[in-house]
Amino acid sequence: MNPSEKTGTTLISAEITVARRVLVIHTGRLLEEGLEMLLARYARFQVSRISFQPEEETDFVQAVSTVHPDVIVLDGNSSLDFTQLARLLREAMGSAPFTIITVRSDSNQIDVCQRRHVLVSESRDFLDAVSA
Image 1 (cartoon, rainbow, N blue to C red):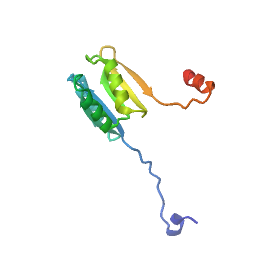
Image 2: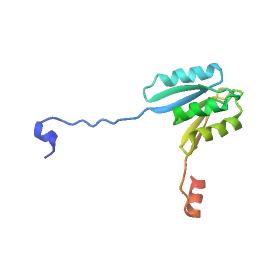
Image 3: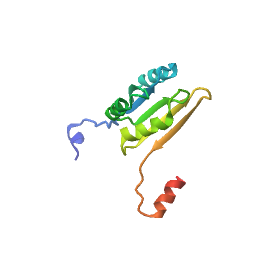
Image 4: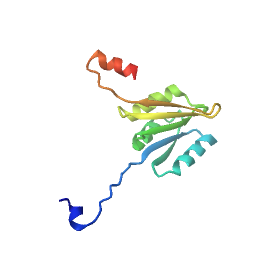
């Protein structure tokens, strides 16, 4: 007999969800403010903001490492140097998986790129990853 039957109480299962850490990269554009405000309305997101200044690479890497986001949101129409940004994110995030969402306001589209690690022990594992 389980404890809830013994006392006559009913156990209610509750799903506990952990807030997704979302980082909005700011370059001073209005769209970034709007995205941050939209996300902040929902308890399932823990929203942070980091300003990106190309000349402050060390500060940026440290800030991203501290936040350790699950999702990174950025404005695809900003003047970001995406090659530099990718290198800095790789440095900041190490081997952790994360998702980058690039919002393109000029076409009402988003690009979603997921970084994940797959253990490859034989060629079949590689082929499966390419096919996925």
